[in-house]
Amino acid sequence: MSDKTTLIDPLLAQVRIVLVETSHPGNIGAAARAMKTMGLSQLCLVNPKQFPCAEATVRASGADDLLARAHVSETLEQALEGCGMVYGTSARSRSIDWPTFSPWDVAQRVLHGTEDAPAEALRGEVAIVFGRENSGLDNEELELCSARVLLPTNPDFSSLNLASAVQVLAYELSTHSKRGQAEVHNHVDETYDPLATQGELQGFFAALEKYITDIDYFDPAKPKQLIRRLHRLFNRASMSRSEVQILRGIITAANKAIGK
Ligand code: SAH
Image 1 (cartoon, protein in one colour):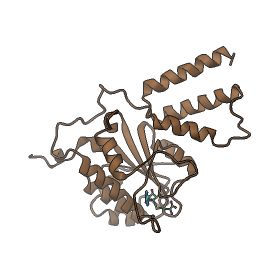
Image 2: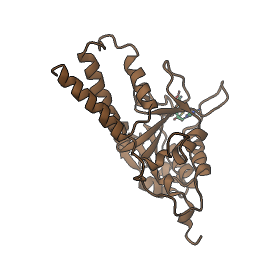
Image 3: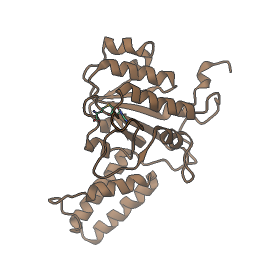
Image 4: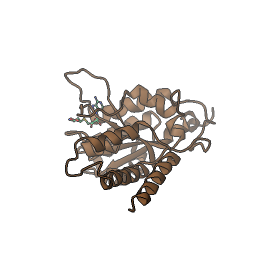
């Protein structure tokens, strides 16, 4: 192998690490370093408190190229634009449990797939979202994620430092990657139906919510957990773009039938 870059599995380039409202610039630098050591390259920052920042550059210890290329956005929706699978990392339990995976499972699903589904990185870009140092990800942010990632820890002390959590995920992805195989796919494989993007899913959720409101199945004044349960159901299905189009088509036809 003559060129060092061929030692990195090109599928890792499909993975975005998204940090939401990071307070300490040192953590951004440390996350960039964690990523680069493991062959990840796409860093997205949502509304960071301070960036660019000398402290981030110092803590990156040579991974400043990742900082220079980091994509900075105002909202999580913007950072997820065009992404298929989105994982949200969180150490906290929620009232309705979301599909939850370990870092090992995530790496397996992203790079190798499961018995019934091909590698997610072959079907689109994948995002792994990390929360704020003091309060993690809120419920709305977690709802933009198709699945949740929980790092197994000491039950009495479960919160890792942000950059340490990035390191664990990056390490699992690295160990599952095909190192030394330069000719693996380096883009979305067109033989697979691409996964619906988060934007397409949100569009479908909005159309569905409006429809079930119009037919008086759902009362927005008494929301309960119905909408979250529906989101969870459809997220679990890992729907492709064409499947979402079919469901949108059904809603359009149903709307026509009721004169909406
Ligand atoms: N006090 C915060 C923890 C923030 S730690 C809270 O209550 O959520 C900063 C970030 O690191 C988290 O938002 C999450 O993205 C990641 N993280 C830390 N420990 C984790 C764990 N055990 N499992 C999954 N993600 C974790």
